[in-house]
Amino acid sequence: MKSEEIKEEKKEKEVVIPEFYRDLNEDPEQKGLWHYVFRTNGDRKPIKTEDGLPHKLDFNWKDMFPNVNDHVEVEIGSGKGNFMTDYAEKHPDYFIMGSEWDYTWAVFALERMKKRGVLNNAAMLRGDVFYFLRDCVKSNTVDAFHMYFPDPWPKERHHKNRLLRPDFLDEVARCLKPGKRFFYWGTDHKEYNEIALETFDAYPTCKVVVRNTAEPTEGIQTGFERKYKREGRPIYRSIIEFEK
Image 1 (cartoon, one colour):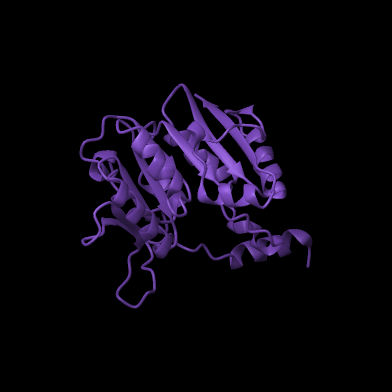
Image 2 (cartoon, rainbow, N blue to C red):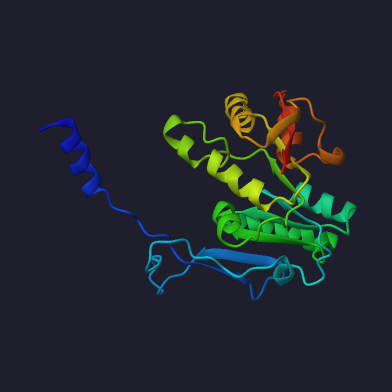
């Protein structure tokens, strides 16, 4: 069989997996906790869209923050909520959404925010933030992004789970408002940091303005950062500017 025929046969066998429906709802028992999860029939099996296209939601930041004043920032992977809570407390005029895939961590962060009284201008998303950005957030509505000490997925077979990739930066760039806007990045993992900075460097509208030597954002260290510093691990922090 000729190579062209083999390619054509493979093409015919490819199966396009339709996108899943995802619904965004505030937890009825936990103010400030928003769930962005698969829609199911009660059997945990996600319902697929009929046309195989992304399920887009008519979401506005006012839905999450009724008193929003047009300044919104997003933290990707908030962990136990150390940064989110301190930052929201320092900036009561900012509206900040944190995110975590794991329900336990999302609730832990929310409880910290509750105790500090910042739920007027902060909220937690439990779900996949990439799809939330892609399918919910309108263009030109976010002022800054923060991403500190994400899971590096160190095993090669797990690298596909890393979020910092070109299609994610497409959504970041789309969601950021026009002008010069920042993405704050920090990690202790040397290899992931190198890959991340290569990804930023290769992206058309990105410029790494501080490479590896940035101070903690407004002096706020995450819980992981304090732990890693005690252990003597190197910390890599950068500030990336997006222009459009």
